Amino acid sequence: MPKGIFHSASSEKALYTYSMHKNRVEAFSDGVLAIIITIMVLELKVPHSHELSALFALWPVFLSYVLSFLYIAIYWNNHHHLFQVVQHVNGPVLWANMHLLFWLSLLPFTTGWMGENHFSELPSALYGLNLFMAGAAYYFLSHALMASHGRDSAITKAIGSDFKGKVSVLTYGVAIPLSFWSPLIAFLLYTFVAAIWVVPDQRMEKAYKSR
Image 1 (cartoon, one colour):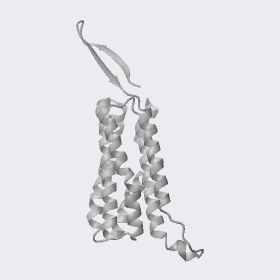
Image 2 (spheres, rainbow, N blue to C red):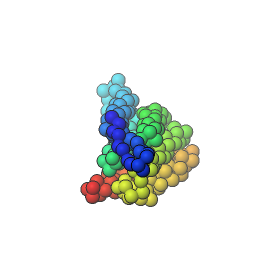
Image 3 (cartoon, one colour):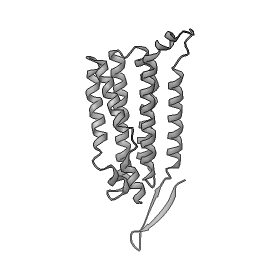
Image 4 (cartoon, rainbow, N blue to C red):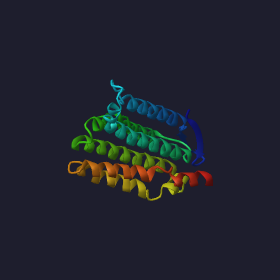
């Protein structure tokens, strides 16, 4: 629920501002990410054969699922850390969060297409584009939160120059065209970005502890 806070601007005027609690944003985002993981695992079709070779035939689908599961886990962890150091949300933050969830919700489709086609050129490029847009959306969400809390806020100090975020988006931008030349190199670049984000964002943990 919104909570009202009155600020006296002068003896004649009073400015009324409001902020919204972050709880519903966190709960809704958690639910969407859980559904995304569920949809992705349903793409792992049970083989009709009892032979071990039937399982080996699923390796491209399983490998793409593992990478995407790791990405969803990274986004959930960092989203959780991000919202631990903010006090409230506003309209731009709500839309920035929905923008992020939109691109993440497409991961089951791009993951399945890439896996079913054994990491061929166009599916790998589309997967990279999906990751690029999700990374950019997370960047926008972070900056929307920074704008709503001010320059001296804990979140602004914690994010700083956001070096890892910029490197991630740049790496996706390089990997997408590389997918048409070498899907394997593109896949390794996608894995590299996931690897640098596996550890939860220490900046947010330090900011939370200092509060």
